Length: 278
Image (cartoon, rainbow, N blue to C red):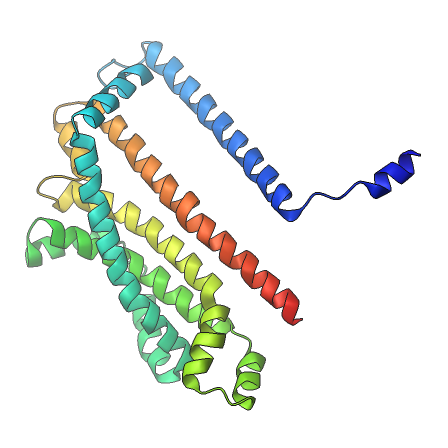
């Protein structure tokens, strides 16, 4: 009787399994954050460090709330997001088509790939002093640093995605009369899309890291990185930690909830298409 019941019980659907996996991941992440917060709070209240250097979590939360209420933190976050999105958009506008051209044209690849291999290992913040000499302080330097940091993940992932497209699909589409335009939109772009989305996600991560450092060094005013650097001069550790909370929260929302969701949806859709083709 139990065997019959087990046999007739429907298996969990893919959506239910995905929802369960997300719930488990969220639970583990929440548990980890709670443990880290408890350890931090215990250390802050132990007296091992002066309260001015290691404020308690309620103090940090109160400071963050005050900065949110008067709009200061939101304005700084707005400046940082403007610099990130502007620089990221420039990196996508340059890196995506150039990466596709590298994947399709051997001459472009031979010219650009050694250049990218030489420039990519240079940390983006190493360019800050040079950019300050060339462009002065302000938005221009921060946006250029973001552009430099985000360019190479976008470029190389687009190149890898185009190179990874199955040549059989290209030949089959060409045999059926597809021109270069149809090949690009119907075969190359869908085939390279998982790599492109991954490149966009990696580009945002590098851009988000770079903009905070650039704001600490080059921003004349405004920005989350500038808040941290300015608070250091007055030993306002609660302001610095509150800014770090905002930086981490915004980065998490974009990296996991925005780009992560797009990447998972693209990969799942591409996997279904490949299964159907096979």
